[in-house]
Image 1: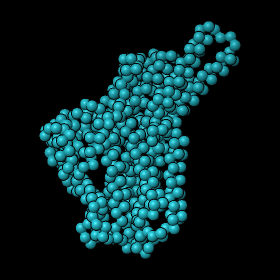
Image 2 (image 1 turned 30 degrees about the vertical axis):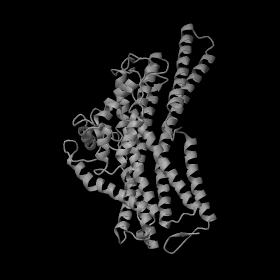
Image 3 (image 1 turned 180 degrees about the vertical axis):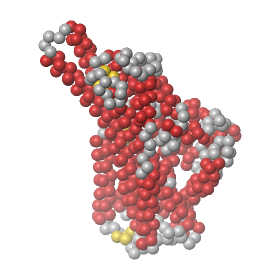
Image 4 (image 1 turned 135 degrees about the vertical axis):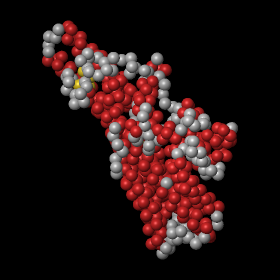
Length: 493
């Protein structure tokens, strides 16, 4: 295959917008009708509704516990949030009592962000997978859906037989099928093939388990936001539930939407976890490129003095970088969405500060808690992304050190024989080419990205700078506008 014809994982905007419509329309009530209009066939629409959980009723498509959970938790929660939003948009404010309508809008943003992430997931499905979603089971199944989930299949790929092997095969295809064509360079190697070496590295990296503290942290983060809202309401005397249907719908919708934030916060931690696994795979591989026979702690060595070994190492690196590429692109997108969410919360805080819009103090407290929690989790994911990107810098430094070492040795050995001089010159040339390849492929062309920028210390500084500056600007706005709050918690100027 010509290198210019090497396939890449592409994002489909059509798949994204269709999925965006399915996710944001109320399940059972409107999203099945949208599926019927978009799919243009009752059978296809039925399959889509079952596979995407828009109207889960058939045990042929989903296990009974998924159907039960959908009807008891997912669907009612979606309906309550939707009704709460509709109520604050169209109901008379007099019937809302002491409820701030802006709270419902802020809370809905949690659910909207989660649905946006899900739509991105479907945007990264390949054409065959996407088409299979409209086909009957078992052409597509619940297990296949689980494999595509970051929180299930990709968090524990070893629990899904064939997933790692399939992604390795796809990575090999994306890099031009070189893994099966390039032999190992040194005859003393006791492994069967380069594929075995790569598979061993991936086994070590993807045997890592999701840290046990993830779930407690997600729960604590959501409860802290919800608790801050309830505490502010209690202190100011605002209704926790209300005494009419409209107030109950809005309050329940607000609380449910905030609880849905567990999803996006969990995504943030899983993104950090995936960046960590990928960095570990790169660290293991980079440690195998040694200057001397058998001095690798990992039991396998690629000799820097061997052109064949250098070629094999380069191919292995390309495949490992491309492993699970669609998941990798999704993880970068999810991290960016999470950071954008915190930035938008800061923007909304400034809107309230500078426009003198009437609001309740509990809304400010909820926004502040959200900014703090989301910024922390998003920054943690961004930090892990930066560590992965810095591994490329470290590898470049190692390659350049090897070139420098050869240059020094050549200068000290004033009379090398022609064969040694030719081999040294060839090795230096290959190492320089590898350095240029790493620089272009991993730093310029396809670096680890956050918010569309290469993940480095400058990005995390810029993002945190925007958040901190935005919060301080909002504080200044509250001070300059002479903001005060009544005993009931409502703002006045």
